[in-house]
Image (cartoon, rainbow, N blue to C red; front, side, top):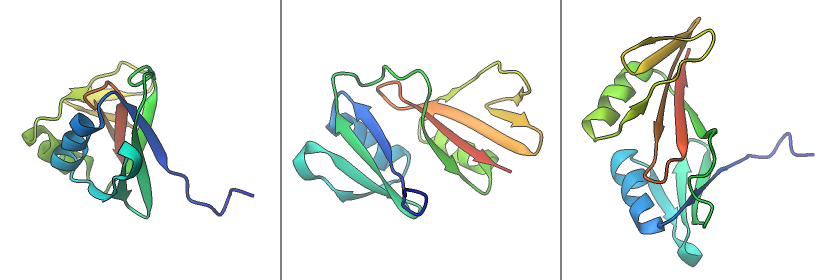
Length: 123
C-alpha cells in the first residue's frame, strides 16, 4: 500500500521564520513552497515539511536522517556554518571528534534551533 510511496520528514518548530534561516542558510535546503505559514524543502528525491507547532522540540529522538557520501566533509562544512554537533554514548559506537562510528558506518547528529535532532550517515 505505502511501500511504493515517498515519505517525508515533518519537523515541528516554534517559529518558521527562525527555522527557515537554519534550514536554508546553514543546511542549504532549497525552499519549494511557503504556503499557509509552512516551509517545504526539496531534499534528495523527496521533500521535508517545517511547520509551526506548540509541541516543537519535544521529540527526544531523531527527526530526520540524511544518507551522504562523506560524513567527515559534511561535518566540516556544517561546522563552518555554525552547526553544533551532538555527542552520544551509545552501545556499539565509538567517537572521534564529532563523528561516531559503528562498523562501516560514520554518523553525526545535530539539532535545529528548536532542539529537533537530525542525523547524517555514510557507509
